Amino acid sequence: MHGSSKVMVGLSGGVDSAVAALRLLEAGHAVEALFMKNWDEDDGTEYCTAKTDYEDAQRVADKLGIALHTANFAAEYWDNVFAGFLEQYAAGRTPNPDVLCNREIKFNLFVDYARSLGADCIATGHYARGVARDGAFELHVARDLDKDQTYFLVGVPLEQLARCLFPLADLEKGEVRRIAERAGLHNHARKDSTGICFIGERRFDDFLARYLPPSPGPIVSLDGRTLGQHLGLHRYTLGQRQGIGIGGLAGAREAPWYVVDKRLASNTLVVTQDQATLANDWLTTPAMNWLAPIPTMPKRCTARIRHRQPRQSCTIGHRVDGSLWVSFDAPQRAITPGQFVALYDDSRCLGGGVITEFGRRVQLPRSDPQGTRASVDGATT
Image (cartoon, rainbow, N blue to C red; front, side):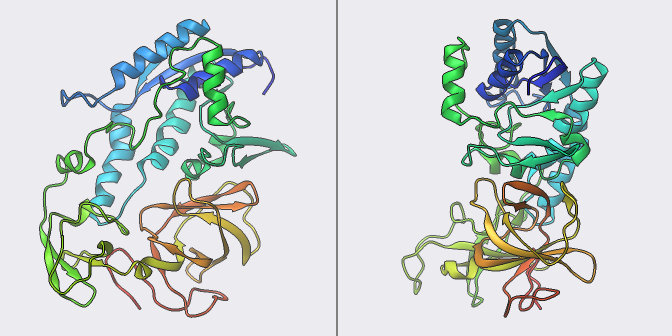
């Protein structure tokens, strides 16, 4: 990370990006910062935090003695991220806007904007590790495996990632806070942001209802019993336990209910008390964003289907239609269409793709998954 290049760091107001900027300065880089606004605060609520975030970012920039630029990418965020986000929810899937935001905004528009200001490269406070080997860029997991954020980077094209520095690669979160405190950064104890960046701490269902109207339909058990009514399939995700809206029922055991299927054709939400029905052991993705040379198939590797999940042993291979299948050694809970699967070879991130189908095999597949196949509309074969 040592050098004298001009680096534009994305400064969010949080402690991670603040320490990223500090470490770049200590490494001898010429550092400037950019605060990105990705959401217009037009609802007048107390939940929008862009103003506070900007004030924190400015205080950090002033403390470090670096210039802070600002850019409003709200229109691009709406067109390239949020519109697709709503479309996927309306189709019954559960998209991951953080992955899309990284691909479309933070490692796309940010890169171009930084270069227009004369920067040689960008830097972020992501917990990830970039490695230059034989003239090529490799993405690896961070030292802090609990905070590792490579899952959120699997949608970013390799050439964009290669233009980024990750100053927190070798640090654990506790060390980051201690470095910030020693440096006198006011935000050293600031709480980590959670959830979708533009929503803040508001109830997600209330936010989504502003854009997707209620579409009530039946809630049924796996054996076909009607148990209640839902408010719209877009409000639920596979494996969900809270907020289903059915309590104790006559003839049912005292156990929680879980979402196991969403049938778009009949607008039906299917629930179960048997968590075993949520376990599946293969999935497919139609298009991979490869961050490494495409390996010879089939290949043994590991995968994640959600952030912070321990990497799971699996075998990957190409299907006849060109899509990729992932066959897990052990069943995975609540594989969810619309989310991403991230693949790893040891510590190196191979890339990722959107999950479209999943199921449970009869035997380990040779060229294609065997057994049941499921998709978000509940179709099986």
